[in-house]
Amino acid sequence: MQPTNCHQCNAALTGNNWRLLPTAGDDALVDAYFCEACWPTALATVRHALVTADASEFEDLMQAAFIRAYLQARDIKLASPNDLPHPGGLAADALRWLDQIKARGGFWWRQVMCSGCYQTSRELNITTIPWWNSDAGAYLSTYQCPTCLPTGIADTRARLARNANNDVVLICALLERYAVFVHEYRRGDAADTLIPIVDAVLTKLAEGSLVLPIGAVA
Image 1 (cartoon, rainbow, N blue to C red):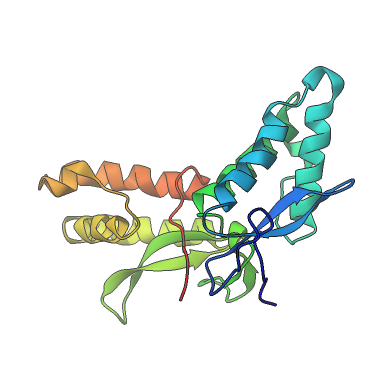
Image 2: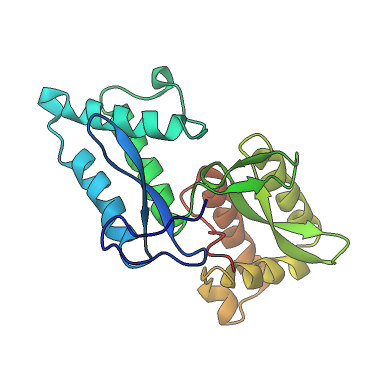
C-alpha cells in the first residue's frame, strides 16, 4: 500500500522514494513513513536513543531489545543473543543494523530475490556483490542472501584468480557505479596492484562493512 504523508513534515509521499523506518510508539517501535528529506533525521533519532541510553540502568538493553523486536517481526535474520559478546553485545548489534539501514540509503524493507537460491528476503538481509555472468560476458551486480553469500563471494574470487589481469579492472569499473572508487585503478596501476585491493573490497562486502546499495527504483 502506498503511504500518503511523511510522519515528520506531513509532505505528500509520491513515487517510490519514501522510506519505512521504526519510530517510537507507546511501548514499542512501530512503522512510520518518511520523505527523502526527513528519513535521515528519523533514523538518527532511533540511533541517538540507543547511543545515549544509560548502561548502568539497563536502558541500553531495553532500547536494543526494542530494535531487535522490531526487525525480527519484519523477518530480519538476527544473531542469537547467546552468540553476541557480553557486555554490550546486544546494543552493538542493534547499532550495526541501524547503520546497515543507513548504508542502504534507508531502503531495507523491500523484498529482493536472491540470485543464488531465488528465494525472496528483506533487502536488509541481502548483500550486493560483483559476479561474473557468462551469458552477458561481464561482471554484473548480483543479490545474495546470507546462505548463498559465501558461495557467491567464493565464485567471484575463483573467477578473479583465473582471469586476474582482465577481470580486476572490470570489477573496479562496476564498483564505480556504486561510488566506490579505487584510486589505483583510476590512475592506471597494473593488475598486480589492484588484485589485493579488490580482494579486500570483497572481504568488506562479505562482512557487511561495505554496502553496495540497490537504491531508489523508478
